[in-house]
Length: 334
Image (cartoon, rainbow, N blue to C red; front, side, top):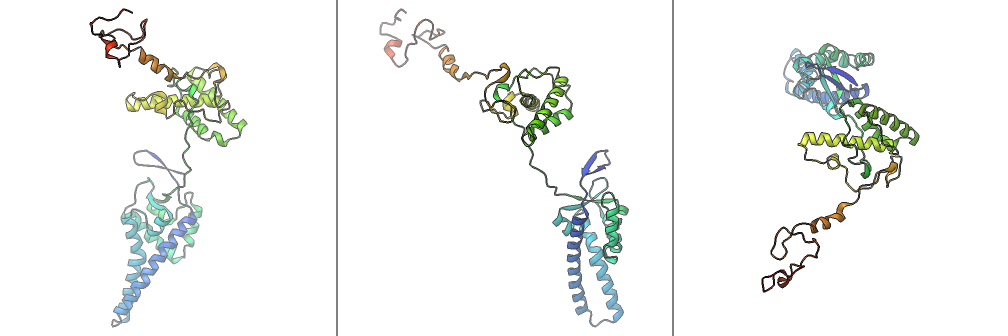
């Protein structure tokens, strides 16, 4: 990676193009330019057969300058540093500060490229690229430009696994303000790659990161909780807080962090996939309490409101009009 500093003092990390890809791009550009030059030359020879030899030589030199020199300059200026060869190879010419090139940059590169590429068959350009730390030829040095890679193969972004359900929301009282961003990044990278590590190496890394995190938060990990599960739970809590801060506090802890409640605990935390080590019990299923809570709602019985249905007697079924209100208008005693 090459660190460039823009005019606003912003550091950019760009990947300079290597010599093989640049050579391939130059070969593609030269093949296109020479093909166009041959076609133009044939047309000129056929159309200027009646002219004298001096005029024909002048037209040939003009065609050479316009097609092989002016053509690449015009293409790089109009495309902001992406010729046909560079577009095919995923390359681009940028300024030293990372901005797009202009006509003067393309003019200097094209003029010097005529000498170091066309007249020396690329020998000077190759030597200069090998000597330069960022692979720049003489045209790039004098123009203040750099050829970088636009299409960079990147690995698939890893997903932070959710913690076991019995740990979700258990660290909502931790003070995470003293944890630096570098430690969060290290924890995230470990969680996304822990399944690729050797078990003993991964356990040692998790213990070290958990110790650093506990030192920053002032609260050690609970007894019996695997360090990887502890890291995942604290990371989920941080994500939940960031989501509440970004979306106005409408998202819950586990929901904001993307961890489904009630799902099985992911493997790889160094502990069982179900059950709670360290004395922590999974939260009880409160779905069974919903009918009970609904049955204690106040419902009118016998025309009286505000009387609970289960206050010392069974609820009167509403499907029976005679039981709800008899013909005499009196409610039978309990």
